[in-house]
Every structure is written in C-alpha cells, then in structure tokens.
Length: 68
Image (cartoon, rainbow, N blue to C red; front, top):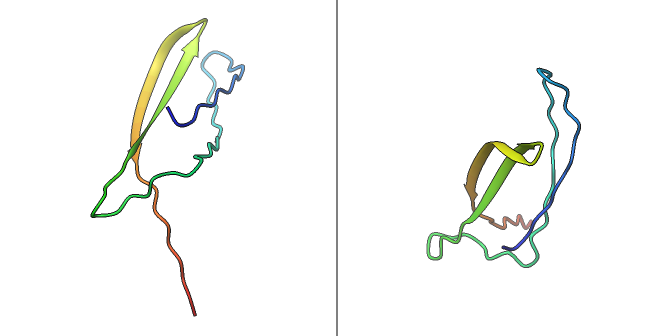
C-alpha cells in the first residue's frame, strides 16, 4: 500500500451526497509503454461498520512537460 486516506461523512438516508478527495503518492513510479506501472484505488462505502458498496479503479501516473 502506497497511500491511504479515510473520510467520515454523515449521510442521511435516501439523500444524494458527493465529495472529492485527494491522495498524494510519494515518488510514484511513472507509467510508460516500456514500463506500464499501474496503481489500484479502492473506494468503499460503509454503514455501521459494514461495507455496502465498493469500487476499484486502476490508473497510471504520467509526467508531461512543455518547453518553449
């Protein structure tokens, strides 16, 4: 595991709620066609200590520079 963050929100029953979250990776390995390093982000929604939904996202980190 390279990073972990937990956010607790009180969401009333049957209401829509959205939020954003930022997680920093210290010295991530960069994705390239020669070395396609990927990370996995797992998001879970819990209620009373029980997982009621879970979603996994695979992503890569790249660096882009523009020089004049």
